[in-house]
Length: 120
Image 1 (cartoon, rainbow, N blue to C red):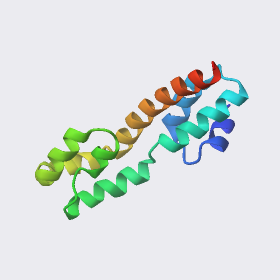
Image 2 (image 1 turned 135 degrees about the vertical axis):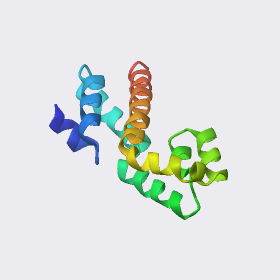
Image 3 (image 1 turned 60 degrees about the horizontal axis):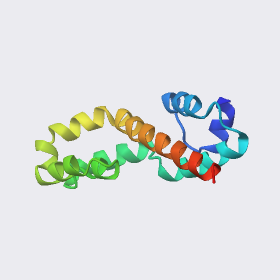
Image 4 (image 1 turned 45 degrees about the vertical axis):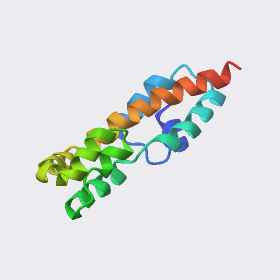
């Protein structure tokens, strides 16, 4: 099952594989392919989050929060230079957690979309 996830969803990582496996274990192959297409378009890789967090040190703080749906926090970071760089440093340490939490939300949303498409 993990091999199918790795093949269908490029860039999927550790805990994310386990989470996707748990959400899709009852899906047929056709449903899983639909899910993987939807989810691949929605997920953000931890490398993207890391690069955007590093950009926070050069005057564009908060972009990593904005693209993960935390608009308010992203705008706050933008206007306060990443809360005087402290928030940006914390995000730099926790970039994988930020990515995983966002991807969990997107996986649940992708499952719901897949189920509604398959029930039509």
